Image (tube, rainbow, N blue to C red):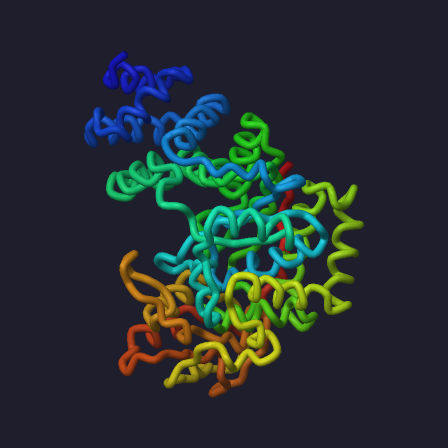
Length: 433
């Protein structure tokens, strides 16, 4: 078998066998196939696509290229969730205690932020003492005893995907549905979950800008799940503006606390309850979505959800007092109010620009080696549909930097104020099963 023959075959849009895909992925991972041949192979996928079987084979090859987490010592159906990336997306912080509180085990591996989207691990590390590195024994024991644990992703999970992703970045093959879907699903499957709920973001702050793109990606990932015997549900959610009112790290933890305490924004509460409800149904805690949604809402209203968050923080070495006293979380020495330039309605907020502004303030990373400023971030005082007066604060920037004019300039361009009130868009666009 030769790489050039496989490239030639895919160039003519022919279907590849499992053995052919495994050969080229394994060969590239072992440095037996050079970058220029893998680049050609990726471009044939970009232009000709892959069928459902090929995408499943590709995903499986990524999974088999490195370590696989064995969650068999954990009792019950292990359910995971994944977001395709958004701005102000602290949904994992909310659903973890909610789902665990319903008795469904969540053994979660999450990543760090890079670019304009935040990372769950960075947010949790803004809590003093919170450990995101646990031994395998601690991880398993916490899930069995408390139904929850969250750690950073292991270094040798899907190394083929990591190596190929770096190549995709410099060969303009990032925006390929088969490559995106197999990349995401391989990490979830290698992490050992029995069932997966996907939060597929759609809008200005997401990778998928249209409902058609989001549905295509969602259907492809659900298809991979079925092919590889994982119950999978995709929830397509609105990312035309940041979720909630906070973007950053410690301030997003504060907002997650508000949601679990019953004082959260409508968009975050609705999306979190929807995703958590699907997780609970897949995990066998409830027979149907409506029953799960009602029960989880009662968990919030009763105060049980916020107590479960305190428990999560405590068992991972953090200070649970931050829940009752969020001022214990890191803050910023400088703040700057961005003012409305005219009367009207907030017609549009470019979520990606908000995310980039937060990164420029220190809340995110330009490169993977950058340090995070946990206290930096943005508070949105006005969101789409809100009325504003000239000179009124529309958002506040927070940073420990002394110079941040670039962030101010970026955030000012993110807001569009109009005389016309925009139409309301749904928080949830579709559910793909």
